[in-house]
Image 1 (cartoon, one colour):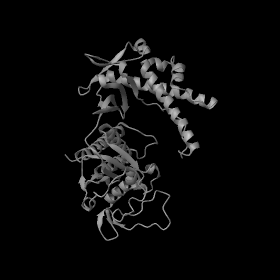
Image 2: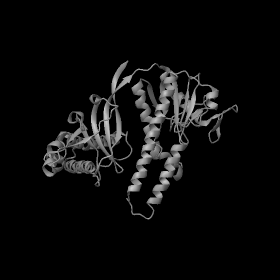
Image 3: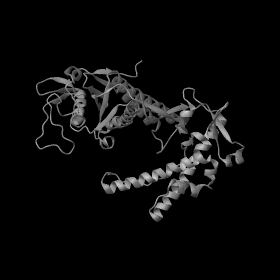
Image 4: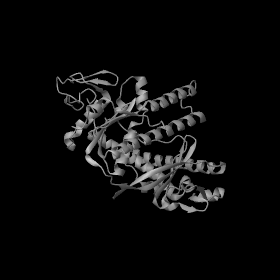
Length: 419
């Protein structure tokens, strides 16, 4: 049953010839320059009046700008809209500081130091022709160079009528065509009383325990290894180089690493979703502490490994899939879930509210192994995932009696990169 509409995004790696590459570089560089012009006007307005411009103000002020004229008008407006939104977010963060909801003081949006920027075209500006998708350029470009448009291929697996935006994305020496399209949400055959708890980590990227007797671990060692190789290679290439050094080889290995990370995020999220659909699990509870990446202190080496693992991106992807397939996604803080014993039903206080004299019944005896009060040994991360479910059990009315000791002792380990 169709419930609501969402939007998906598909990226296509372009392989432009020299002529097309020059056009794309010119277009994206003009977007950077226009963005800087909009940022200058917005900053000056803020310094002098304390106000920020709306997207309409920026369009009116810069409609005669030479960089605006070099771009198609709707694409230029989209560029200035992103500038207006960044200043609106800045003001929102300032209000958050006054309200106590934001702790770190935000910086006023600044200028881009050259480079290439994203260019966005609305769907109505693009036409499909026998040569491909026609992207118009600004009036000045036709006057200067005699070029009015350029063409990019249309993917065969998408319905053009469903596409809402086309984006030219420059990244690490490559160009991508991003297509934002309408996505239907489908109500799945699941039971919201069936729930799975997810405890994120490093070696065990995701540890999952459900109240239907299943448990699994999404292995994170391969992703950790990829990041480790990348960090070592970057260190070698930047050795004895000035600050801010960049090269084609650095761009190449960075783009390769980023693609591998995106692939890992998509595969892991799909794996969790498929497990829920197969077992008719309708609720996912994800343990997450806001700001844990910024405030974590596990030593310099472990910090580097932890913060480069894109767990926040994976959490958001799982939440997106839940919305698409009609599952319920809940996020909860995970303080003391690793220390407390699930089998002994230890009290689970929130961070900063631990009662005086609180003591856990069990103990983590070594990496990956937790011992309860009566000596039962279970997987430490599975214990944490089960406690994450306990955090929200009362609020959601969940029955956790289906969590079996067998699931806690030996979760199924999944290495999703192995064919």
